[in-house]
Length: 259
Image 1 (cartoon, helix red, strand yellow):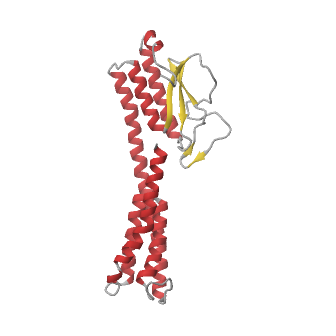
Image 2: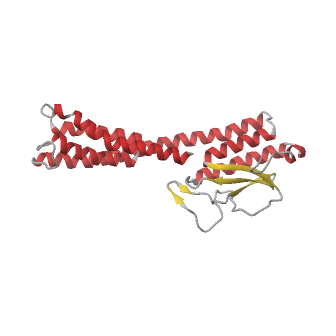
Image 3: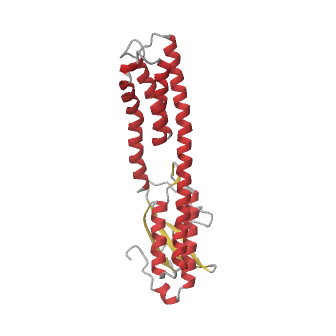
């Protein structure tokens, strides 16, 4: 889910980065005899900044290149040509490209920092929501469902369920530091893909392993170390809820993929 949404958003952002400078360059044609070319170039720099803020580094870089081409094609003599006759306009075009790439990178870094901050705040709320259920005495089944919901969204999972001991098959284990067993991982931007056959996330009751959460990841979703560590914290909260519940509540949990 997360990866597909990001991919769609990236496609739109790249379209903006590629097309917006051309549209703005065309709109500036009636003003090219009234406004100095250096100022026209600054207007295109603003387009680069907006593209980078909306779409990140790739969109900003694309907008910088497209802005330079639009400046050359629409706003320098000979018009509607890829050739530039004036040495000053050549310098302006090169400066536009350099400045566009630079400010695009700065804007993209600011966008990424804001996105990371928002993700960190949401992760705090994930833990708080589960803790609030436990503090208010929610039934164990409700706590399990909340933990499952948080893990599905946090890790972009296809599925997630609880299994009680004894386990029927062996899975790669995610340890308390968020490390997943295995010598090879498929890396994507921001992390690696969880093993296709699933990962077990142990659930402890006062230091005793009483169950595991089976995580079935999406092969198109990268999971960062921070997200894996938060998943461990959510499993620990489930363990606390299981420790507080009676044996009948634990044994009566609906577990497994066909719950």
